[in-house]
Length: 124
Image 1 (cartoon, rainbow, N blue to C red):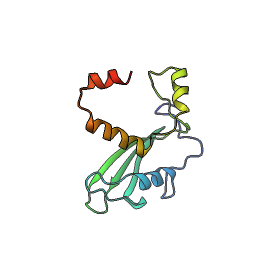
Image 2: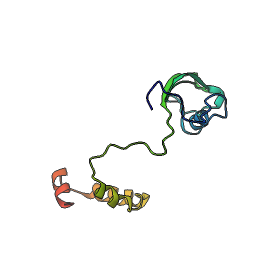
Image 3: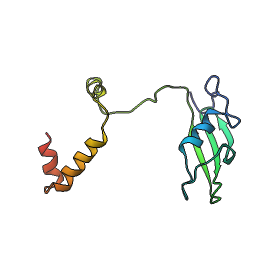
Image 4: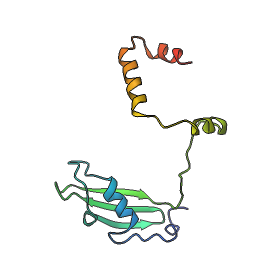
């Protein structure tokens, strides 16, 4: 879908119940003070096809910001990767990285005395 095509089938942009506004309320906070937005703080200014221009006004500090959102009806975005199909499939079966995995690497790197070249050579 290009910029001037119609919005995804069945998409209703207007009103506080619109999926786009509800998504912004649930996920976006003010870049200055971190305050959450309500639906009343969000104004859809314009859209053309997939592209939506939205103004956010912070109810706490008064900061205003613009968001350019790309709204598509695709379940999964196309991912550009250097991995081939076989490599992608091998990673797909792995479990997600856990908090413990991150902590283990943190401990390892904190105590590692070598350089990056040595670290990469050791993991081959």
